[in-house]
Length: 220
Ligand code: CDP
Image 1: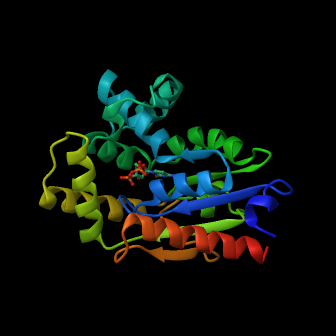
Image 2: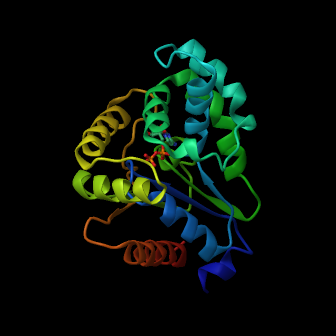
C-alpha cells in the first residue's frame, strides 16, 4: 500500500536530524509535502530564543537568562529575516546546550509530534530524545566544506553578507558544540537511516529521502 494512503490509517512520524546546513530543513519540508503532514523546524525554536536575547538583551553565557527568554518564543514572528542570520544561529547553538532551555522547549515539540495524522520534525535530537518512537528516522549530513558552500549561497541569496572561510569556521565550531554537549547531543540514532548528501544536489537529496521513507514505511 502506498505510504500516503497508510497515513490515513496510522500516524506517520518522521524525524529528520543532522548538522548545520546539511539540507535537513528543505528535506523535512518536502517530506511533509509528500506525505501531507505538518512540519516543525525545531531549530527555529532555539533561534527564536536566541533572537529574543539578541534584541532585548540577555547574556547567552547565562543559563538562567536563556531559560527566561524561552517565555518569549511565541511572540517571535516566524517570518522575521533575522532569525536566519549567522549571529542568531551562533547564539542558538550556545543556548541550546543548556538543559534548562531544552526542557523549556520540550513540551511544544512533543505536542507537535503527537498530532493525529503524524508530523515531520527536523532538528538535532528528534530521533533520539523528542520522538524516539518515530516511524522513520533520517540523519542527513554532508561534509563541512559542502555545507559551508551551501550556507554561503543561502545567505547571499537572502542579501546577507557571507564569507566562505568564516562560515566554514563557524560550521565546524557549531558541529563541535552540537555533538560534544551533554544535553541531547547531535548523534545518529541507532535505528536512523544515514543520508550523506555531499555529492547530491537538493533535488537528488529530496528524492533519496522520500525513497528511504517510503521503503521504511512499506516494511512497517
Ligand atoms: O540551519 P542550522 O542547522 O544552522 O540551524 P538550526 O537547525 O536552525 O538550529 C540552530 C541551532 O539550534 C543549532 O546550532 C543547534 O545547536 C540548535 N538546535 C538544537 O540544539 N536542537 C534542535 N532540535 C534544533 C536546533
